[in-house]
Every structure is written in structure tokens, then in C-alpha cells.
Length: 445
Image 1 (cartoon, helix red, strand yellow):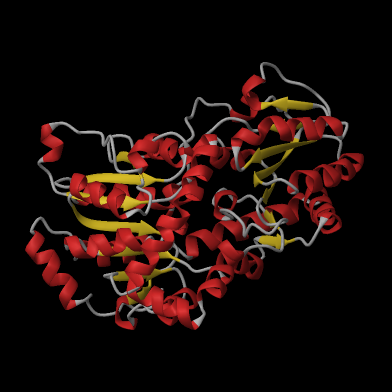
Image 2: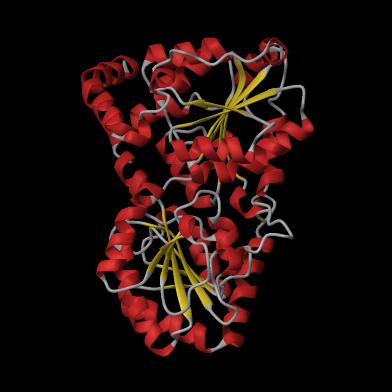
């Protein structure tokens, strides 16, 4: 019944869905592929190998999944790996981070014909998806196809769980979640929530957050990032990463106060959506700041200024050059982005009150003294003033942040142990494994 009702609703909503998709320039690329048409064809050698399908919706999920995909490829080169994304930034991340390891495809829209065509084209023997991207038709079709589906690094934010945890929706989600072979969740809270929504308890396990297992971003020895950013030897960089509309205005207000006492500080702002760079630049200019676009820096410039990071793939390395980092999506109700990117370098981390997407990491950083939650502009200015004025305190906070990362690693290994038991070149064995259910539960990390 639920499958019929879901698809009737999907059909009625399809004009709106397609209209929204076509209205967003960043969603137009790969449109025919998203509809299940014009599938790229690999060479014959590739097509002869059994395929593992990994879905990572956008940049953050691709970053999280990349070490896992690389580890699977290293251990099992006999398989072919394809990573699907929804966004262009996700596609770019796959092509940069997983070149020679996995191919990219755009994920199909959840229409029955689109997911059916994709599955018939790929013939996956295993489907992995990152951070609870639940697409009912896709999961139902994979179950019918006989391919195990494994949720990796699963989480359910309070907002998502609140919307879904009502009796009639629980009945619907139970029919979807019962198709899953395994739910590998980040925390006890996430495991309890997905079981409450209908996942089988015996198939839900706490493996931890694989984002803790990210390798350090590669910085070539000859690469002078500070020089390429136009920074002078005595200048201190404050880096605000993955910012959203509404946050840049607050950062402008805070920076105006900071430079009164610390004129040798430079603010770098990396908008979460790079296509907003021009608007962000205009806003800072209107606020009276000297502004540079990262892509246009040719020589060093002195004095307080704002650098707009309008290039892709540099943010993770840029955090190394910062004395203090602020992670965006937290001063406005977005839910937060990757707090570990600056922490891995030993850079002190500031974030706002909205951290639902990274709640456990935020708590760990606070409890360890490696990060601080700010509630607004005044609080942000106070924390920045203290850390800029006291390098000894700043160093201690940064080292605490770095320890949080090292002390919580191991989720990648635990996830691999579960996943590898479902890797098989024999379709019949896959179906038997689904029927038998997962192996014994693993202890909490």
C-alpha cells in the first residue's frame, strides 16, 4: 500500500520537482542521467567486473566516504566502484579525490523508471549510502534486485527525526528501513532513532563517525599557501569556512571590531556555495572593507582586508594557515558543517549554536577544550580577542582539538569489517546473506 501511495504522491508532485530542478543552474547538469537516460558506458574490461555502488549526496558526504572507497578499492581491486552524487560540488569532489579509484554518475531521481534504469544499467552487487539518504523507490528496487543496501556513517538530526517520528510516517518508514541490510550509525542516539523509525534492532550498529578517519589533506612541500593567499609574515589569518547568507554579515560586524585591536589580522571567508562569491564580495565592500578574490590575488597587500575563497578544493588545506577557524552553518539555522577540518590541523575551532548536523563532534570539542560555541557577534568577538591576544591559550586549544580527532578514530575500520562480509561476486550468495541478516553486533567504539 505504501509503495502505491508514495508513487501516486510522487507523480502528482513531479511537475514541481522537475521545475525546481531545472530552475537551479547547479542542478541542471546530468539531468537526463538523473531521469535514467543517457548512461555513460565504460570500457569492456570495466563492465566485466562486479560493481559496488556508493551514494554520497554532496561535497561533505564525498569527503567522508572517500577514505572508505579507497580502502575498499585497495582491499578488493577485483570490483568496480561507482559513486553517485546529487550536486556538482559532489561530482567535482569525486573526480578530484577518487580519480582512478571510482567513476562518477549522477544519482537518479526517485521515480520508479529512473531507479529501475540505473539498477539495470549498473547491476550492483552492493549498495552503500552515506548519512541517511533514504530514497524509498531506490531501496525497494535494490531489495528486489537482490543487492544488499548498507547505510554508512548514518545519522538522524533532531529536525529530521522530529519530522519523521509520527505514527503514520513511522509505518511508512518501516517499509523502507526493513529493506536495509545494515545500519552503521555514528552514535547511540542515531542508532536509537533509526530503530524507533522502524529499522530492525539486530541490523543497527554503532560504528562511530568516519569523518574522524580523514587523512590530512595533501599539501605539496613546494606549495606556499600563505604566499598564494597574499599574506605577510606577521599577519594572522581568521578563516570562516562554509558560510551561509546571514552569517557573513555577522562576521563583518565582528571583524570590524577585531581589527581595532588587531590590525594585522586578515579575514578569509569561504562561502559554502561558491556561486555566492560575488554577492559576498559586494556585501563586504559595502561594509567598507578592502576585499580580494582568492582567484585574483597576484601580489601581497597590506592592512586589514577580507579574502573571498572562490576556488574549489582549497578550504581543507587553508585551515592549516589559520590561527583561528570559524565553521559556518552554525550561526544561522542550517545545522553546521565539518568541524573536524580545522581541528585535524590543530587549529582552534569556533562555531555557533546551530550544530544539529555535527552535534557529537561539537560536544567533544567543547568538553576537550578544543573548540568554543559562540551565541552571537559579541561572543564571537570575545573569543577571537582572547585567542588572538594569548598565543599560549590558542596553542593549547588547538592541540586539544587535534587530540579529539586522534582519540576518536577507528570508525572506518569498524565499518569495513561489516561491509566486507557482504562483498561477493555471487548474486545468489548476496540474496542468502540478506535473508540471514547481519553478523553479531560489534561493541560500541
